[in-house]
Length: 508
Ligand SMILES: [Fe+2]
Image (cartoon, protein in one colour):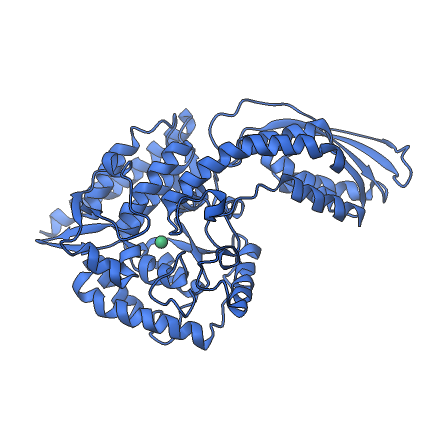
């Protein structure tokens, strides 16, 4: 019980609380990735000071060592992580003999640590049999998680961090493998209706408890799990039906051809049906078949950095809850109706999927300011983008295709249309209370990608990354070996291309 209580205290101690309410400095009531990114930058700056001060003040209460306070401070200064390896020494007191050592070493391995030194001696402490000194190499984030994990073990009397060597922080941590997206679930707030008086579900206890049940699915989700189905209620299906019928009416006239093509396919495959909310796993399977994108359940709004980094792995973090029935045509936060009707059709389009992934890849290791710019680009393209189709302008943004009012506004003469140009779009301020006064129009997805690639090449990141779909990992192209491996793959692709051209010519 002591260990559990200590772990609880530590969780409280290290928690960085961020809530998306106006009272806490969030710039508006309308949610957007851009405001998320701005808010995150602000909170990170404030957190550096406040967490350090609080850590120092409360260190004695929690019985922490100075090194642990420094570790908490370092992580607070760089809450998105640091992937450089640190050396650390831990002192563990074993209650139940040496037998639990194997499990401890396995736990170190699970947190991607390497044991460099191990010593044991009989403990002089009452209630403990052995003291173990263990030196490990691991990242700070993993080290903190390891300490928390070990402290929850009933066979360990004490877990103390003795020393931790600092190695300079280079670039923000980012996931290298799709499984590490399990760490990318930093929520800005857990249950929005509980926190915001203006939320349509604030006064509805039943709705709030429903949101909690659905959120738990996302909290428990781990890489490789099947996404649990949700038996949606009659009310939730009714809400879906009302929005679905509206979108179904508007699609033929206003949606881009790529959206229409996939929307039709989703209907034919009975994944989209008017009377039944689709299940996340079914949609995820559909996307995987078409573009390799998959879905992960998200409990609520993630930080902009976490959300964007998932796209690098062709993973879209999707909410699973439904907006409140009292407000079927407007939701202050993304819900599954917005995700399904707004995002899913285009994530199944190869060209658009590639564009989304490139935004994600550009975000890996980017500075906070660049994350803000990428979020703004995401906002004006993936959420509110328009594109040319012959002489007409059509919508491809998810925020438009899942919202009747703004879709019609964006295609009316009440707003301004500008050509998509990442360098100006990235710094465009946007209207966060009403409809946008400005929308950006892409010549095509291919053209948008080409312009985006050129803009990304001007970013500050001192390395290049690429996604390897075979291993579901992101490779940093910073060694000759990795470049050689890439060249060898490109050679193979060139061979396929040359052979295909030859064979087509022979046929003509
Ligand atoms: Fe969205």
